[in-house]
Amino acid sequence: MTAFLEEMAAGSRERVRLAKRACSEAALESQARSVRAPSRLQLDASGFDLIAELKLRSPAAGPLSTHGDNVEQRVAAYARAGAAAVSVLTEPSRFDGALAHLKSAARALEPLAVPAMRKDFLVDPYQVLEARAAGAGGVLVILRLLPREGITALLDCARAQGLFVLLEAFDADDIAFMHELIAAHRGSNQLLAGVNCRDLATLEVVPERLIELAPHLPMTVPRVAESGVISVADAGRVAAAGYTVALVGSALMQGRDPGALAGALLAAGRAARGAH
Image (cartoon, rainbow, N blue to C red; front, side):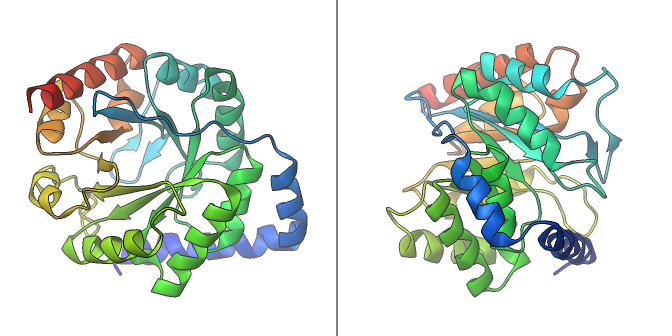
């Protein structure tokens, strides 16, 4: 594991420790049961969709928006532009995230029937319960962050809570593990197979990795290109390579009209899929 992931995992474990002192797992599970069921992730028949991201800061690029962000207005703009889901960063130390952002996003997205997804460095099923209690419909799970039993515990909790899971891979070894997990959990979770093309040592984006790794991804679940999609040309490129979803954060956060950009990315990706 790289120094960055070790730092994120350690911070995540400390957040869990403090959260459990404030609210027991049993009490949190009770809260999660009392929250209205989230919207289901619905993917378009065209074969290409967008997960738009709320990310206030990037460890590599710093603050991502100077446009006076209102969480609810921004995620609603994403949904109205056609995003199938909205990813919400909740990691506080390097991404300026918070569970409160997830809760606000889920509240704004509910009448639009679009689920929110918690994106964080999850290390404990308690954090899956936090996501559900905040109104999320899905969570991201980083495959190399935990040993197999830890990943399985997260997936089991997500299944019990009715959440979809985006499995995040960085290389071919991660993808091999992903194949095993999808085979083992077939039919029990709504799983998505993602490739993050960020170099974890330098934190730089390496878009070529999306194309290199695409042929190795499972074909039985939606395939998600994470990072590296900043333009309509990029959306067309990853769609042509076989990805059925693009997760886009930085470009949408930095743009002055995120709704228009989201719509343009969708149109480009769907045109490319249609051509294939």
